Length: 138
Image (cartoon, rainbow, N blue to C red; front, side):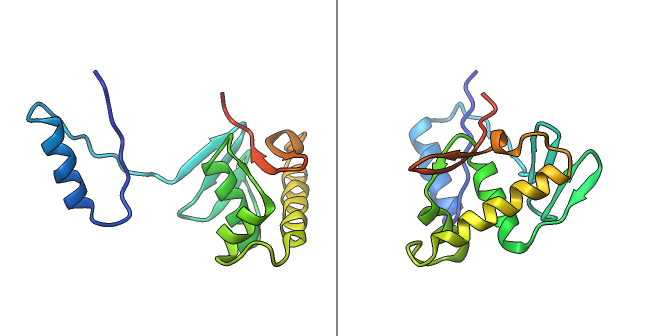
């Protein structure tokens, strides 16, 4: 059995109708509800409640720190440049101030360390000369 999972931003019904017409009649559609929970080595990230929990204790992050953490965690294994992070979080050209991203990463790591993550640098990796990456589970 093969399963195809799709997510849509806009025009969900039209896109789904076109896909189903290509696939044929022998198709079952299963609904998938995004619970918004990401789990990594004792960390629980709830994107809807906007909280990060480690061993039952909430790690308090600023809005920007949470956005950066969520971006990287949702895309585990993918390397983002400082400019890409800046643009994704602040919504405009990332060349303006990439030192802000570096400082936010330092703050996130410090808060993870305080919460008991032994080596936050292995979870939130620096890829020298390129950017940052959240550790892939594979």
